[in-house]
Length: 447
Image (cartoon, helix red, strand yellow):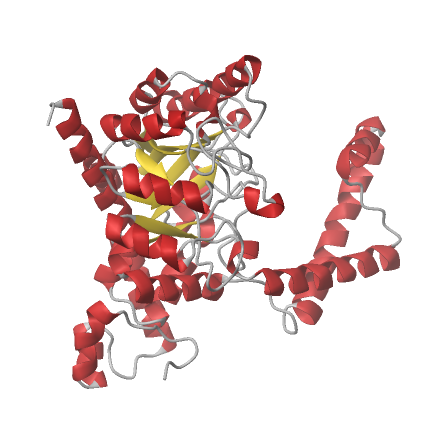
């Protein structure tokens, strides 16, 4: 029987069961009768030695200017101060464009937005902070840059809508540094159905379109990993049948633990294992535990409403609130901001005392529950980690990059070894990238 809060071992690690608990701990580098302080110290050592990689961080070009950029603490979840504070080595920055109309104008607008995001990432790594962060195109780049002490940027592409109808853009995006791409987001694209078809049963292609099938071949040719996190199940299964290279799910969790369409079910996961791919378990509250998240959110909102009433404070939200704030004089705006700070402080204290002990928020332990499940089902070599920071992701104790160590700490508590933690944090995804790029080299050589 599995004890709650401990790690569930995969069949590939079953040999460890034959030895006594003391030798197992010794083999794993876990001292007998280890104190809490000792465990934390050991976890910090592991965290410093492995390469920590978060495979999905959304960006805004507005945060990549000379006046406002990632060298500053911008109040967002991923920036250089937060990465440095939390020991996050690699950020996959996402070139994302939301689904729009399947028209020439829609494609042109989406492509322009995509190029702006590519340019923003290059501006950060080449002009704004080349001494602190560098763009990686290969796993060797990642290891070299991390060893130098700098942070690593990589580029993922979310939603192939921005390609338009021109498959030559796949090569162009690869040359700009894109190393994975999903063929759809929330809404059916010209390439693929989206998982969102589960809401209304309306589908556009019944999986992939003919153009989507051609895109798979081009992604294999130019070394771009295929990402199945947002496309429909039928589309993702077709992708795994067509591809010559391993695939990834850049930010998804286990549907068996939380039944939402953005998570992968057992059939998809077993196909991913057979394909040699990796699922990057995502720290998104409602994907990890919808019921728990809803209960905490409702209780939190009730407390905030009570505090606002007791303080006779009106929270300005939405477009109307922004308009009201802009209409204020500077003195009125300063007074409002001061009142808001007092309200937030009082609310946080009440939530910590009254809500979290009774209806706790989704946290790092819930994330690692999904990791445990995935490791048991498909093997540790097929499991990774992502946050979806600045795109809705984040859980209690890993709510921005500065708290990244807490994930490593929980993995250590569950009994994962340093080697295993290194695989989960980065080794598995970098292995897939190597294999995808090897397949691309073979295709380009005419093999």
